[in-house]
Length: 287
Image (cartoon, rainbow, N blue to C red):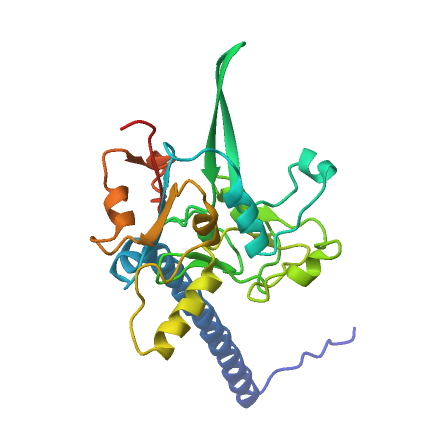
């Protein structure tokens, strides 16, 4: 009967193999530690961003807000048209409007009260509320939307990948998704605003409080060697309102008209119980 020969590993090779294993385990442990550290930093950054609206928004030099007087508003729609023209919003067509796929950064929400034939229609202007605690910024996986230091909820169009999480998480439903490439029939392209980029298919867009006007106002103030004055920065909707029902300004300035109206007994915000802290206020009808 043949004897089976067994091979034995020399002690030196055993020590070498053990050292290699320890080396590989050390590398894997180090990589795991780095991943854990990066994850912790990412979570801390997200928490800091979530806390910024409540802290940084209040302490910033400016905190832009709007007040709409429902007692003055006549529902003419001038603000809607001015917003669309100023920000190069696509016109759309009846078929898209039927599917609610026509983007309108400013829109009029209709309320019908009473019973026929004694009916009364109320119109509520709606736009991005530029919340101090915006739910939309918390769900964007690529951080394409964020709250800037002046309280404006900004959108980086080139970074947006069209997940529509922000759209679904907005309780006011005033974000819009571009289902199609924008089309402007002639001669409309000749009148497009060069200060505002035309959004492409597959991204989300919304009201920006005409942020490009703020940039131009800052540049003008810097060129003149002065600070930004009240009235230098005015959104298109306020400028076009024939009833002067829209007020705009710095909520951090207690002497500003918009700050005074926002703290009046007639002032209210929509869905206040959600804790979004919107910076668009309404004044109730009547004195």
